[in-house]
Image 1: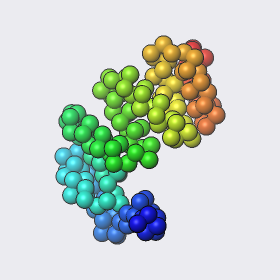
Image 2: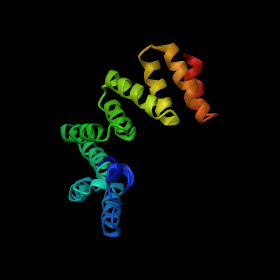
Image 3: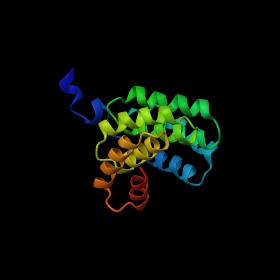
Image 4: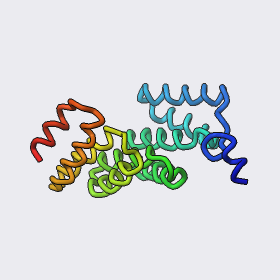
Length: 165
C-alpha cells in the first residue's frame, strides 16, 4: 500500500545498481561524444530500469532530436511528462525542444507550468521571460525576468532584455 511506496525514494522505485549506473555513464559518454546513434541504443537498453526511467527518456529524446528524429524525440519527452507529472524536468526539457522546433506558443505554455512547479529554476524563468518578450507580452516578460534575476542576480542578458521590455 501507500506506506510501502514511501519506504523507498520516488514512489517505491529502488535505487539503481552499480552495474546500471555504469551502463548509464557509458550511454552518457556516447551522448557527450555526439555519437547519438550509439547513445540512443545504450539508453534504450536501460529503459526498463524504473529508477532511471525519467533520465533515460529525456536523454534519449535529446539525442533523437540532435539527429533530426523529431517524432521519436517528442514521443519520449511526452512519455516522460506523462509518467512523471510531479517532476518539472520533463516539462522544461519539452519546452527546450519546442523552442528548438520553433513552436514558441507551446513552449511558453510549458514554461508557465514549469515555473509554477520549479519556482527556483533561474534558467526556466529567464527562458520564459525571453519568449514572452519575443511574443510581445512585455509586462509578463518583465515579471518573469525579474523573478529570474532574483535567483541569478547580474545576468547581463536578462538585465538587457528586461530593460528593453
